[in-house]
Image (cartoon, rainbow, N blue to C red; front, side, top):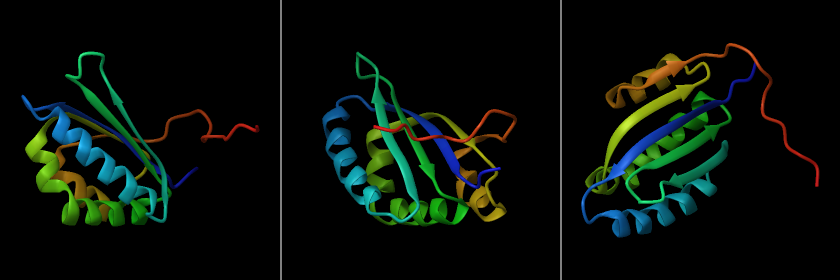
Length: 123
């Protein structure tokens, strides 16, 4: 079983805030790309710009907690000023400390059930 933690955070841009949020996204992507333990960090937007899904994957609960600390310190206020969270699903087996750190966001937790871990493709 893998120790990786992943999630999908669903947000809706507040009226007139999509451009501001797009700029913030660039900062957040650059910052997260330098975090040890950050495995995947991908953002998806609907055709009309009304829905954004953020997919994140971390090596383990400790790496995820480190990310949350950096997010809280550097981005949380601007992030929540630009979007409204509409859904949050966490995948894996997060530690109690991580569950406590995510509690304010009201996530749905889904634990391992079957399948196989992520594989990279050769190329």
